[in-house]
Image 1 (cartoon, rainbow, N blue to C red):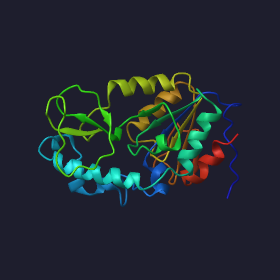
Image 2 (image 1 turned 120 degrees about the vertical axis):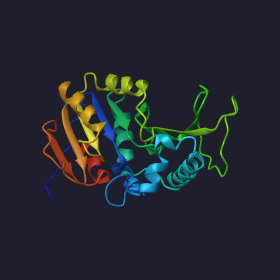
Image 3 (image 1 turned 90 degrees about the vertical axis):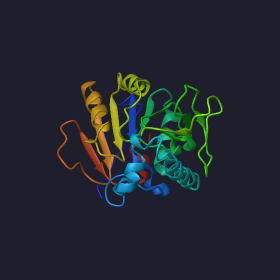
Length: 241
């Protein structure tokens, strides 16, 4: 195997943005969402996690996310999550995390100031009123109701058919401002929103790197480097001092 040196954070690069996807959590025992064996390959599940499922299939959505919460709580962060958290501690204010994941494993590894593109499976919000979303580990057997207005609650995640919040987009744009190293880890760099963020980073002059178990299906002109392998094996090396 070709020797892989550290990327040079703190010396060669000084503002790093790491975009993570489901591949980062595979070593913790969580499944991916797309591709062979992915959760959304199940057509019925894909219908349940569509925005059109609210409110008619909300009990089924809660059953799914209650199970996902329990599964995520039964596992822990892996070496990829820890490598990112350690990098943030070594270079405070220089390493930013944008994640597509909703499993809370970055937080449990010790990362802070995480931008959650798709929300969090461990937050709950009202389907009707503007009551603040709250951290929630509960598994619901009956449909939970808002204590403010009495309307049904829902997981605070972005469902199919929903747009990313303007706040999250603004936060991501701010993180990419002045970025000189952009890592895409555990997700394809050609699928939205990763593709848009990669383009923004490239336009900002960042050195753009992909870390994934598979190469890009099409040659990506915005990637300067591709490292093929498991995130939990490569990130501790790439993010080392």
